[in-house]
Image (cartoon, rainbow, N blue to C red; front, side, top):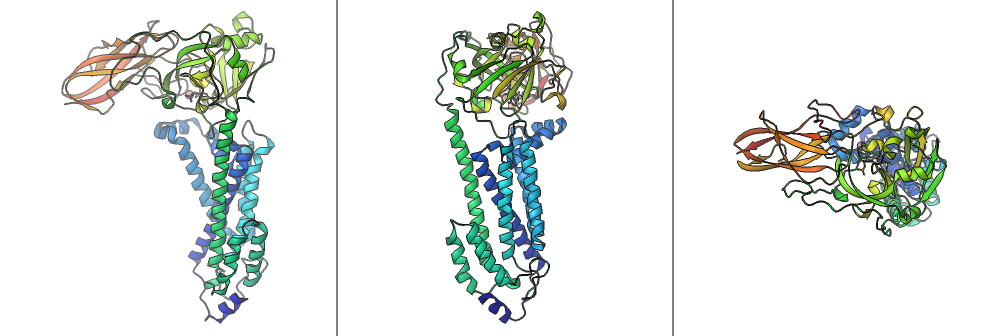
Length: 577
Ligand SMILES: Nc1nc2c(c(=O)[nH]1)N[C@H]1C(S)=C(S)[C@@H](COP(=O)(O)O)O[C@H]1N2
Ligand SMILES: [Mo]
């Protein structure tokens, strides 16, 4: 009532410029979207963190991205592709939310509809996860519901398009006079924001005694409402995140795990397996430095006490193992195995060497009555499924031919880190990770290559992918300037499950010279090498190539990672002065 009097006693206020009005609308949309995310985050924390809309949409984008784009992303931004993806999704969401807010000023129904569309996208993305349950829709729907109510409240505080009492027309369907609208806001606010009457009260008190801004914009009320909503959303979001993380920590009990001593420990590392050359990485890659490649935006956090591995399928008697079953086994082995990603570029860093502890996969398969195809078994493919729905197809032959294929539970003496598959993952010497190394594994299904294509196959990668022999120069780095004199050129080479016979280095167009090889740990690990190069001033190009124990030398022909691994020689250009 005060408002009306004050406003109408002012000399015919000019209509508010359209810009600020739209700005307020955009702000309303952003605040509402923020609330939706906060609520969704909190709901997701309580239900399923990977079902929160930002994660679910980002995940859907990852799965739908065509291979060349994905490769480009990995090549240009590397492992920052994930944060960038989330940021990109957030920016798109913000733009759309701002537009919704502006639309809602014209007609609240536009706001409702816009938010419904966003919530539907979030819910659809969450429900399309391979591991989804109906519950997955809840975070998006809850967030959307809160946003609809909040946006309606917010736009009522926004400036009217024209000044004066008769100015309500098109944007307020009910054509309610401002005072009524304001009262409605206060009422609704008190009703929806039960625990926060304090914030509503001051806004309704002294604020309403002041003249409203042009066009009936109750700035105070808007700021109070939007500010409160934003603060609550941020609190809900942060609280949800914190709760989910804390919960996961408690549940996973990873820290509490004490790895048993393996019945078959790895032989001690031979003397001279690790060269002392500055710039050359360590023989074993520390867990914290180990590359991470997966499609999981939200890393699965598995409660090991609830975890089960189910083995079933063609020619298998169904078996289930708990984590305790694995820890209790008397046939745990410890082995050194180098793991490589098929996406690794020549000279790239998606390769690492680890001392793993695990159960031989062949033994588990035998326990389930599985016979390899050579013994008349009906399945030639083992499909590993992870808790987040990844599928990885491995030849049964490779798992049962005597190599150290493991269901790994330990990585460099630690329980598997969460990022690397806790509580259990597969490791198969000689096969790229995408056809072998399933992390967060929950299921092994015996089938055939004809009957089933695992996740990466329709995306343009080969069904069969043994690791290609490769070598990498770790020092000097491309672009380095080094002083003339003796320069150690050093790196690693791997020819998995066959072994490295030799490494050769070439300077410019000179002859291939044999590098000195470090002692071999096993044929499944990489091997370090070094060549002392009498470097003379000038620009030089250093190339490397490896020869495996079968006598095959790496091909010089350059091929991209897809479909089954990059080839070519790693070369670095350096300046000697
Ligand atoms: N569940 C799951 N397992 C997965 C993947 C994945 O995306 N999801 N990626 C695979 C790929 S492509 C590689 S190279 C290895 C990488 O294992 P790392 O992240 O421990 O280095 O995991 C494999 N296992
Ligand atoms: Mo990979």
